[in-house]
Image (cartoon, rainbow, N blue to C red):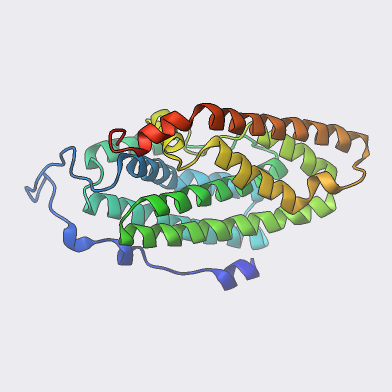
Length: 293
């Protein structure tokens, strides 16, 4: 916790929004209703930002489930609140940026946010703090990867600067969780191996219940924002290499069985990546081309 606070960056969302581009919408100020085609961002980046924004704005539920999973005692309580402070900036900045630049329909966005927050969120690993720790470590890294990729694709300096700051936050969050995960590995490698196998086999994005999630997720895959290959090579494998899960000589009978399950989950992840690379190339080129856009 001390290391995270020392490295934390207190940036300000309002500094990354081009307010001078803003125009009144319909309503009490009698402005111009949003119309399709106003956005300057590519459809792929817009879909990625919408997906991530809807996920970010479900923060009240995330705060609750993380506090339930890890408690609010001592350093954990400090972490839960600090993490919420930092994640809150992401949603504020993204929403303001997208609305000011008229990149999204404000009515549809609010309807989607309302439905998603009303639906709530719960960890798939309720009651299992170790599996929950594995999940949030992977999830923070996956989110960093998606923001980093969108930054390279957005083509707008202000948006690039915003996504750089968000990605850096997500990376620091991943490092916090990964450090705790490493300590858990040193204490009980057998249980952690079992948790890794369970989570890798069932991992899904926290925004999976958001309206339009499936369509946005497919867009992110085909555009190269977040693909099965990236998930395997830039999220799954780095965490396992960091922990050196497959380098420990003996884990005991239960641990070896867990490691076999983990190896099977890694194999499934690798197969998905290979299948995507084999079959998805033509579709990705179509999405990235002017015609696909």
